Image 1 (tube, rainbow, N blue to C red):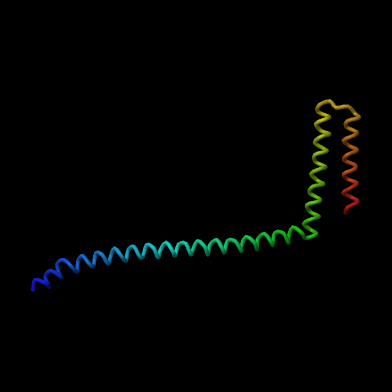
Image 2 (cartoon, rainbow, N blue to C red):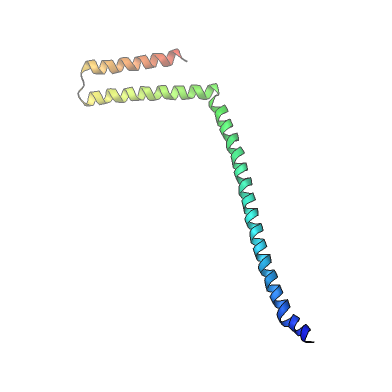
Length: 117
């Protein structure tokens, strides 16, 4: 009878605590491994999604309409810069020769734009 009481009062509770600790440690390791696997999957998914987006962007950027739009935007920016330069020269009291040179540059830019259209 003492053996049964000893088992019931000491061995079973201690064994159940040890088993609980072991299960908790095992669950923690499994959770860490699962988290690492999820992170690897996430990186892999983000990697191929980024590649797809980069490819799509490159394809769109190589379309003739996009290239022409970028060229036209650059030309418009060059014209705007030249106009700002003329405006600054006029505000600073620039000589007529400087203003004429800036106007000549605008004419050259406009001619290049017209020729490339």
